[in-house]
Image (cartoon, rainbow, N blue to C red):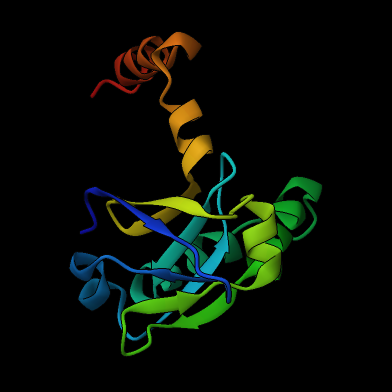
Length: 143
């Protein structure tokens, strides 16, 4: 399980450090793809396989299902953690998430999310109503 929030910087080659606590659960090889809300998703293979199985269940005749499959599979890339604990994120993924310098790496149960630091701050901004939306969602989901 992935939990926690860590801040890092992207180096000039487009590499970021994966937090030590996330390295073993991610494995040496894992999948990076476009995420939701403007972030990237990093899936260990076991979680990716489960996610892929759900996407395969979608009806090919559905325009929405094809769009969802394209978004995740079309942007997916296998990543490897190097000996210094870094990964190279492909340029199209960095551009999608507007990753330029400072990033936030967060654990979200079965996956890791990589956010541009400012986007993460904006997402969590109390002035933007994040707390109220969170409370409404929790109530609606009966958590």
